[in-house]
Amino acid sequence: MAIQFYHIIPELQPYVKMICVMDGGPAGNASFRVLPDTCAELFISCHPGMIASVDYAVTGNTFGSFANFRMRRYLDVSMNPEIRFISLCFQTGAAYRFFPVAMQEVSDSSIGISDIWGRAASDLEEQIAGEAREAGKVRLVQDFLLRQLQRNSHGGQIQHILDLVDRMKGQISVRDMARDTGNSERQLNRYFIRYVGISPKEYASMKRFIHSLKNLKDYPSDNLTGIAYKSGYYDQAHFIHEYRMFAGLTPGELLSGRRVVIC
Image (cartoon, rainbow, N blue to C red):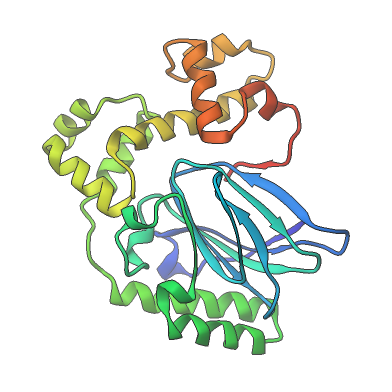
């Protein structure tokens, strides 16, 4: 699988962290597992009729162009030969500005883009199919998202709360989160469910897991107990349990070279 990254237009840079074109290549299906990272992502097919098989840890579906909301479950993807997708990943807590649904309604799911944006999504796919240049296809997707952003400018209360949890690498209680941001725990829960799609406690757990992945990669010679404590887990058993839950693999299995994508 080949990946070509593209520049994000300035208007989208606060909300989008990555845009690329993914090419499945000619040598059979490209299969890989994407670990959860509390982010939403778009996969827009560059060619009509090309599909990917998506297994969201429970049941499999096939899609042409789709959005997935990888909050706390891993995603298994199998791309057909020759398939090309424009893939765009949103910043954590930013996707709600582009989607006409509450994030809790789509958390840990994959949905065809026509089920989200209707005719506008079909028009986008037709325009992409008619554009010969790859850079032009990418620009069409960004222009489409810019229009959605201008129509959905609601919210905004959540970002400074997410920044706090990120700085703490998930090692913060909901009570301290509320105290340090001047919100009640009930307000916090309402903001997270509406704009992120999971509870503040779940978000903190995911951020701790994501931080532990970095430690696992940066300190491969450390034993798992050391990595667990370094990452904020109270024991190795808890550490392994969360890896099985979020990645479907133990930390050792994840390090063994399986085809796993960490965004």
